[in-house]
Length: 245
Image 1 (cartoon, rainbow, N blue to C red):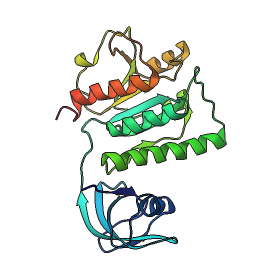
Image 2 (image 1 turned 90 degrees about the vertical axis):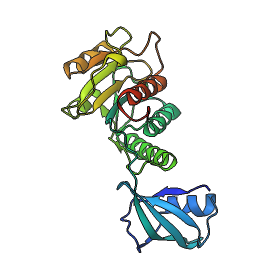
Image 3 (image 1 turned 120 degrees about the horizontal axis):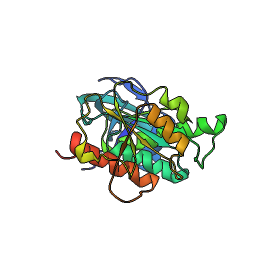
């Protein structure tokens, strides 16, 4: 039996009736054709799934009543922050979606010397909201109950000044001496930096190295930005996280 999940940015507790936000109501009622009395699962990022039933579903919207709450822990023991050079259009959406499915905990979208995407303040705000919606949708699909943080897009220099201090830091480099098989287990999570379509410039690399990033080899081939991060994350999760369970 298919279980339908939806994210709502609202407090949820047993017995509470909540007016579903327009996007959630539209998805459940207009797209999935749920009706009054039908069951669904709501989550708000608090680490729980909240079993609910619709007590109203019509053109005006939908109201759900929470009937049970269950703690769900599907988070990886490996905390990964992905510093991602902003990619064009659907590539960036794909990166965010798949990295969420693979267990990334924080996204830091950055512009750099070779970025093909240039965002002014208005476009940056719209992109940020859109990217968060992509991550939320990926959580709905993958059954994650904690929504990864998506930082506002910023310059690489600004992002480097605001990264987790204790995490190990790595950037992919086909000429690096170390591969994932030889990495020591990270005790405080890790930060992985992936360049945009044009890769990191020499200035970008110098800034990353100065900020404590070491090179990490991922095989002999040069991978596209949308492939490199996913391959590295999957390999890291298999070695230190939960993909090998």
